[in-house]
Image (tube, rainbow, N blue to C red):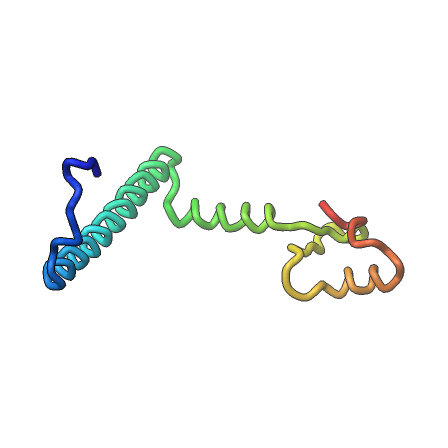
Length: 107
């Protein structure tokens, strides 16, 4: 907002300030909705260009994110992994108890 368009809030009464606040909140909600709608339309176009559905893309994204979030892998069984969050898996607890270092399993 430029200085020429600035509103002097100090000279407004409480009702006028409440009206401005309400209008601003409505405008924020409208712009957020429009932003999400625009993003959805772009996503729909990407799905169409990829000859896929949005659901297929989301499912693929979930798999990719799961693979990306893996921080540790069992060196004896590569299908056993851990993200580093939550309880340590049994295979890791046992390896650490046997004297192995957690960094031995870092990806």
